[in-house]
Image (tube, rainbow, N blue to C red; front, side, top):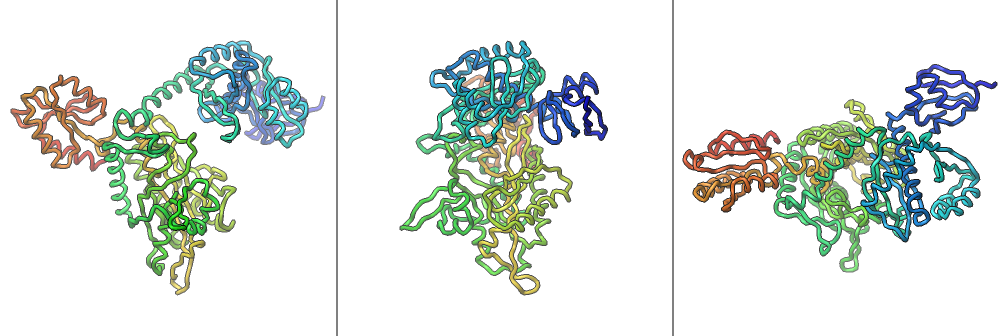
Length: 638
């Protein structure tokens, strides 16, 4: 019998009979490892755990408690869901694709006779559980491309036929489990019995291959976990996310709205919402001014020739809106950088002037397809806390580190942790390889020097330069893209930006594009969900409400309201002839931080009795002491 040498990740080797599988090797190490192994990596290639080994190789076992193992688990769950759907609806439904995604999976189905609804989820889950209990072997089979086309055509699966016809490979792989067969590269779990806990969560529309000219499919979303305890914890988090949905809370708290009459993706800010964003913007201005930024402002439209010079017209045109004025074409700005470069170019600059840091709360508009619009987090018109730093190459490292420190300071005030990744050159890019390398290395060097961990996100940089993306982690441990730091050697060259160096010669500055909060709209959406609408005192549009117990205290309550408002406290009054408990409940629903209860005792003593929205009562205090309390809490960003 021929033997093969298998090298394991710890450097040890095992000699096994040719044809042995990764599962066999896992079993020889320990039964627990064999039970947990769901796939393997053989010489870097991800394969099924039953894959036969015919030559010497390096082997890494993939277990359920790894990200890759969980992905295999969820992709197999997608096949199980498709299997269940085919069992239930037969020829009325065609299967298309079903990948694993973050926190779950989905499968896209086509049907012109059946419409999926959440009411059917229990029935589909029951069939999935039945198929899982049968512990059907999941078997991989390779066949010629033409044989696969004939197979799926015979099954009436035209979308699978189209996928195979577009493949360049002459051999394709399919997976069978019971009566179900699917086109797939794999790998998959060895059998359906591995799948223990799954839940269908929602259904939505999706165009075939993401093209709105193609047929509309029905996308059923679901999730799966190795055990029911993890699934219950995740479903609890989903329910909490539904309660915190900024679209729901935005309406309940009367912060903002959208109107089809105004246009999709365009936010209408109501008084409390407009005040909230004003508080954020004022905070931003203070923070930027004390860090040496200059506030600037640019126009909403600029001549199209300028967008051609920058490269936006060739590389970003599909995301822009254009208009015409007196026969001249203009582009409505999707970014603020062009005006900032014109400001720089308006004077001769010396190395002594640098770095220059131009900051603008600039409103931009981008053409987003209606299908991806989502509350405040994906809109067509939004305001960015945009800044552009123009510096010498020698100053670049310090400026990047300064922005990283800025991000850390600001996110700490909101209670956000975050992760970092560097997004590298995309396929559609301008500038030389040398400039891209210099820019990417500058970002990497700054991160390495600060000791901050980061990941590489290949090919997702801006068309003019690589960037550091900051992913915030909210109270539910979800990731949100907000801050970015982009390094750009290309646009200064295109706009012929220069400074006079120590040697008296002209040199090219480097530009750092950066946002801290990013889109103000998106950041407010994230904040609403992070805080569940319970904004800290310094950010609350209404900080306190004055409530009287009976009409006897109305005059004193009115006086307290006027005094607090004059001192800058954001206060409202509720002097209605209603029961105190009713008024307090309404204030709690509005998530107002403090209720100032006014009864006979408060009138007699000239005090207020603050009650926190959590139900905690503070000691009675003089109105001026409450004002001082509010100011102190706001100064500490509490």
